[in-house]
Image (cartoon, rainbow, N blue to C red; front, side, top):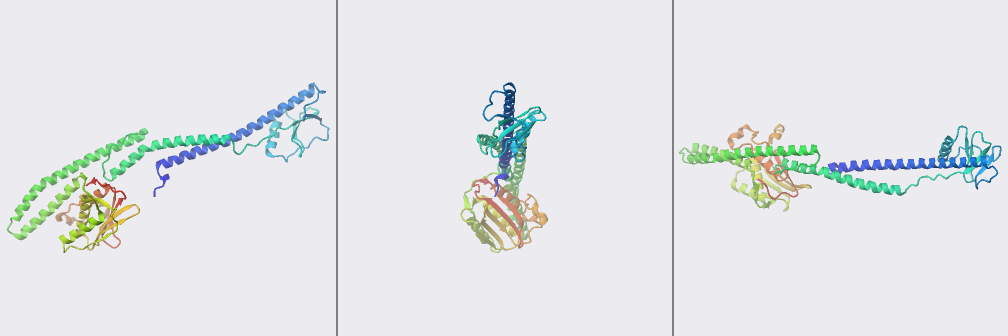
Length: 432
């Protein structure tokens, strides 16, 4: 089963989401770090301002009382705390930054534990310590409004990016669908040239290619149809004259050659025909059984034909197309295979299966790739037996135009096996 990540839109969506997620996470971490540094710098500036204000107050008005929790203590006082290194990392960073903020030779200490944190500051040349309360350093909260805003911005950016990616892959999807139809031999309307310049150029080239190939196919079909149609009249006259010959042996030989040529002409007409099969859809199992019974009735001495029909009534194909496919395969199996010939149908997980196989020698592996090419005869002796090399080519073309796939190969137990796989919803009207 195809995974969503295998599509262009899935990969674009994954790339967009990953890039936006990484960028938003990086911005979130950067903002939190910058905010933490800003808070530390603010605390340092506040403490420096307070210490400077106390120093000015002591210098100008030593007799005036200081505000509460602010003191000026003599350097010889035994209550001066010793330097401490057992402080949290945030407070140690604050002390280092605050010391860098002061003049050279200044000393900064933190009050003893068990009391509210007090900042002890002694600058070079002062005869006292200035003790001020230390501003609390609040660690950044785990969740705040910034996370909410980042989530909103991220969601909006993802939706806009996915819409742009969807719009970008729409022309590619249309082109991919047209390529698939062209590969199955179905009519392909011109694909709208949309999207970036490279994609428009690719679509324009594809439309030109489809036009040229369609023109070449039409010219070839007209040529084949014209030649085949013009040959019908002289062939009919030749057969009529052969029927009036007195020599029975010579008459039978000429009639047989005329019939072979007529069969080749009929195959030319079928291969060149590009119309629409508007015949009524029929159950494949029932039609296969009827066609096999007709073969047994018309040619009682022909090799036996067996059936293994297990698709059920849901498998339906246009009558004319199905008859053409089975007739070509059965004729090919009777002419070059060995009995028994087996017609098989089945229901698979992906759709339907129709197979025709025989128990002859099969085809050499090196020739399998050319088996379905038109006008290719793998057996040089086939030229005089009414074979033009179009039977398997006609089958493959009809199967592809019904949205199916045709596989030609040798069976494990010997013989040639042609396996045709059709989608679950087979078109009811196909090019015949």
